[in-house]
Length: 305
Ligand code: NCD
Image (cartoon, rainbow, N blue to C red; front, side, top):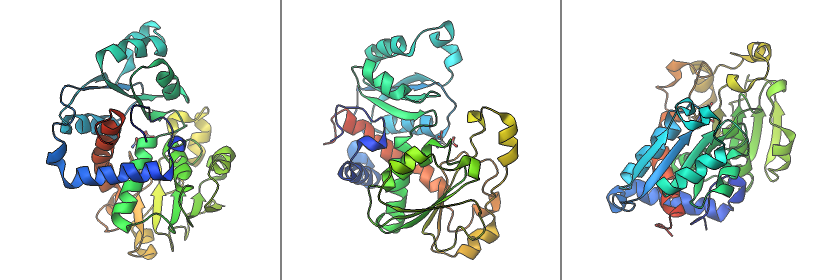
């Protein structure tokens, strides 16, 4: 199981591990009082070298709701990194100030590197374009809570599939389920990298560029932001920005069965008047970040078996 280790990539978890975390999160969700002192005396360090709202705050909220405390930063310019300190040295310091670390960093592989240096558990809260495993766990939790299962679902991943780490982790995770059918809808230049598709064997995968009719027949449509900050060339960004816009009409035409998700933040890819539709589940999705992160922290610290 995941206790006393790190959570770096969703690929490191088996389907059983994933199900175990989702089950623990469900119990936390339903019986919060049972867990309110579980981590009293423990400290979570949130090291955020990249912007974040939901991920960082939900990690902090999760730790507080478990009775623990948090330290950390959300702007590395205010830390010794700005003076040239290496990640390895930062980690060696932080491990003596805390019991567990959640790290977000712009470089792929940085969370794995941090875990190699750290004696305490490390959770990857997003490493560049690579992985965002806790987001995937809350996405799966949201799907299961609403639809009761993940096996057999038809799921469209839409938007920036090249640079978006949430969809990389999610595709890896979905490949562990049975009979999942996946549509990858993206501008050709932003399609899912081949290595990730190869690493996600199992689901039937169809790729396309057009958003027209893409929501039809889907159980889940998972929309993502074009990751402006990852483009080496801003001109390339300008050529794809605003390309996909989910409108109220499109969601209504897709029918009530559809569940519309988004890791957030959104820019313009889902119009605000979609928010009040029954199909829009993205704010609920964000809310589920708390019980999921509570389960992960408590498991890694060995307090939930
Ligand atoms: C995502 C991220 O940081 O990868 N946000 C999140 O954690 N909920 C998605 C994004 O920034 O577009």
